[in-house]
Length: 210
Image (tube, rainbow, N blue to C red):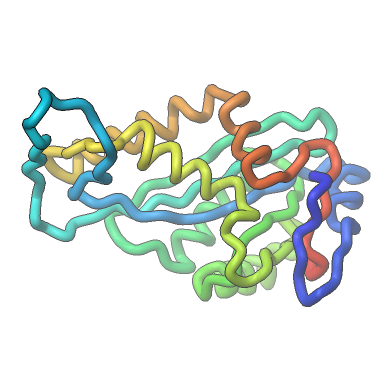
């Protein structure tokens, strides 16, 4: 990616260079929530008749964690996700990183923000498996640098816009379908990098790569 991600005023592409030389993938991670209430968007209706949506007043929700992966050599894109019926903690982050390690079958560089759950999961996993991955922390208050933000944007504001689920099972099915379909659309995932102004083929990761 030609755009550099700033951290502490320094800029460095060392982590991505190492990834290419070693054949490691780049993994970008983020989480989001989905509620029973619809994401209201502009829609069609007969003239003079305002659309009315009847939805649940409950605050039940799902929490999802997603990773967008980029292979170092061929720049192949992948998408992995997990959905939970409770808030995501360091336990779920650790389990997700473990699953990614088993799927990718080699060391990788994970790019993520400094959420407490992320920091604790990374610290605990690296203490036990120091050879599984290295870490590049995103700058504070810069979600626009993470292409996974556009995964949530597409799911919520395109696939599930004005969607009113019957219950959590229905919502789980809809989110799973949206993310599952996205996994097969590499051109769509590639557009998420373009939106973040990150050009595939030349990675410049944050300077604090561990």
